[in-house]
Length: 435
Image (cartoon, rainbow, N blue to C red; front, side, top):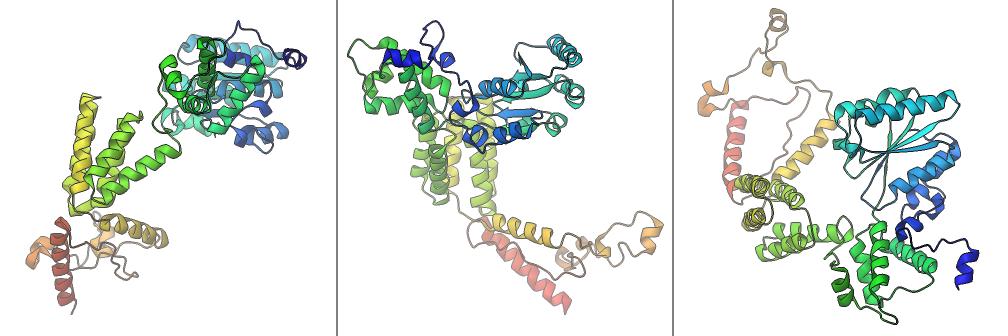
């Protein structure tokens, strides 16, 4: 078997980390990013078209962003130059741009790869714009943060964002198979331990290969670790669920539906499952605010206040103290009366706004700050509600050519029962004053 690996030209040197030795040498070898590097992938098509353009790679660590950038430079015959925003400043950028300009005079192009590009400040990001526009560099920036929030709009308008996905179990299994072929030996793991190692990697190909290397180092001749022994050896527990993938969405769905279903015990269980799995409590805080607005709404207006207060308490106290405030919010929301009336009203009003967005407001409810506007009838006939009986004039506030529409239909639960009675009374008064 050893001769077979040598014939294949595989480097079995132990002087470099396994992840580095197994770095892909072509786009086709990149694991888990077939939507970009596969036969019909975005990058494959760009290379075939002969026009790469500047790019932003967005994705979690260990998904191949740096490797793909290197391979793109080779495929497009561009000089590869790399910077890290963590260790680079204005002087480093100027030096890189000057070097790229020098290559242009020699008829050569530059692919400038900037890792962690979101760490550059606004002024530093703006410095890329001129050299991108005049073709001095082809920028490939890598970021683990959402580019919409982490990068300047001007930079984003000049670059295409490509999303790198966390490696799924099949992609990591493929990496482990390649590692075993490279090493000429099987991993010292039972089937269950192998599955556990894949979960430990959590979508990070580099982490998977590092864990595999550690397992080989720790194993005695003929020894095979089970899942429990592997976790003890590596001192790393498999995630309770696959964060950012199916498990993540399954658990947040379970939490949301438990709150909506008014089951505080189940809701608290799923909340704790997610925390124990390593979920960011700030994400959970944001979701609780959404639940308060979507599923409770005006049946208990304090639900939204409570959820926001819990989120602020977490920001002040952090983990683990602040997690108790979030747990309080979970229980409060689950026990609150439920209504999606405001949610449905918003959706219905948005549909109407899109369909009838060209209609002007009726003139009687428009201000008339100028003489011309008064002459045109702005504000004419407006009735000041506070001067009307019951502080209610019953005027029409929809466009003149549009029939009155009803979006908000409050329930008979909680505070909405009182709101419903108030709206019914106003509807009665409106009918009387229209007669």
